[in-house]
Image (cartoon, rainbow, N blue to C red; front, side, top):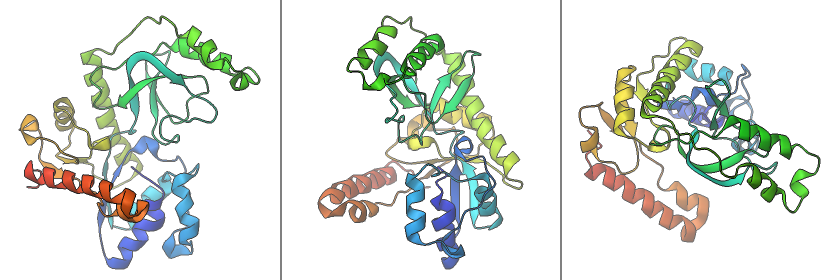
Length: 297
């Protein structure tokens, strides 16, 4: 994804033990700064580094991405352009509040359609923004396009002083989005969007990181569908790295595939035996199913 700890913790540990690894990067999630922050091998303590991934600057800077590349320990490949989500339902489910970033603490962006017809990557949508059921941007089969004018009305209303302290604020916003004309993304537009995303990821990484050669795609959330594999091949990818149970048959002939493995045992150490053991078993079962499906060449 591109968390700050890839630079501050993972790279120093890899260097210590002579390991190399691949960073699957979503370039539009990288902080647009050339700052290189302290790391475990440049004086930072673990207590200083740990909160970074939970704070306002949890993502890598471009300075750190460049520094990772120059270590020659890290191969930088694609994790799509933005690791974002889009709406897949026309039924409102809530609204953004000042205390409720969307959807994952403001770190996984919402892809919003703007008035000019283009999409924007938004990590912290404005308070009042209507929310609908969302799904992963690269695998949602039918995307709902929320009306820009309606979103503007809601966010303007939410700017009124003390708005979210009113007992009826949700009813006021719901009245604005009532009976909204539905607009859905066409199949042709979806393919164009996927093409722009995957091609854009390659181009952005290679232009910002001189010497990088991006030919491998690890789809966000390890999701995959046949069209995504076809588009990836068309725009120059040579290998897919997949995770979770999947069936090779429906992707046959698209691209070579390799398994994306997960740290099964980390659930136990993070959550304790009672809560972590079931998560470990779930992750372990997924790994075994990947093998049965023929994911490992």
